[in-house]
Image (tube, rainbow, N blue to C red; front, side, top):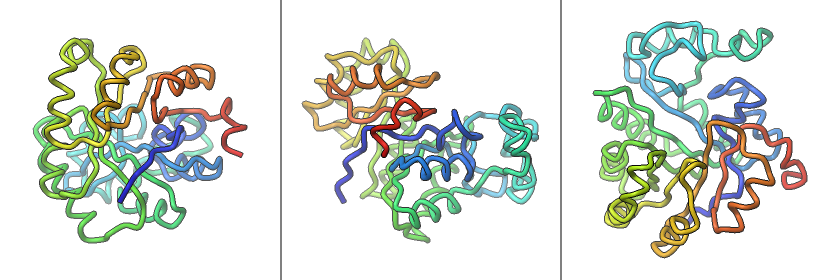
Length: 250
């Protein structure tokens, strides 16, 4: 299956407008006519893949400590909305299955970022792989991660899957030829770059290998910035708040 990424991908749903990595955030992206969303996936103590960005629960839920200390039925009871807006206290951390079911129904593509807690990389990949093999979701998706092991492992378990490395360090930029050769060796679909290290040379090198290029930031990327990247050949920009892109989404 060919995947052509859109110019815009909603970051953790649309985290600037709704609590990140919740059903509400994804529904908000759908409401705004965003065709792809990015989500972060970890596993619970009982190996249920669910949405969470951080290595612990404190920032975005009412829980404490590692999610690996909780079974999913305990995580489901946590408040994943009040930190963003006290009116959204009834939100919870959804399972990956729930999100992929929704995106299949709405024909929304999904960038599944693998966010394993250290030491649980294989368990994370195996749980996600088993879920996808069992349910055969009817939506486009690809996997990304900062962790090479997780991506190469998921490719072995799901040979037809699309995988993409995420790059945010200047060491990787200096050694980008090695990064690119590794991507080519394992037939990577994409490379995602922090906005601070992307360059014209890097974009051209990726394009020469047929690798799609995405750009992300810890802050929202406004349309005037995105247009510069698109003109350089970037395929997709991760956005938190699509307000300045309204005309593109109508």
